[in-house]
Length: 46
Image 1 (spheres, rainbow, N blue to C red):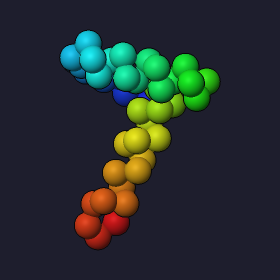
Image 2 (image 1 turned 90 degrees about the vertical axis):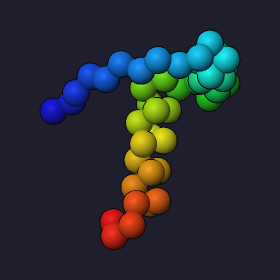
Image 3 (image 1 turned 90 degrees about the horizontal axis):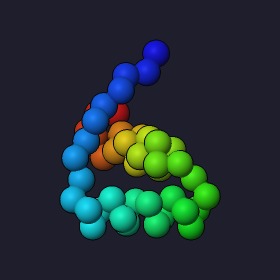
C-alpha cells in the first residue's frame, strides 16, 4: 500500500531536486524514497 503526501518546497530546493533527478536519470519519487529509507539508519534502535 502507498500513501500520497504533498510537500511545499522553496523554488531553489525544487530546482536542486529537479537538476539532481535529471543528472541521475531518476524520478523525484525515487530520489525522495531513497532519502527517506536512508533515515532509518539514523533512527535509534532500528
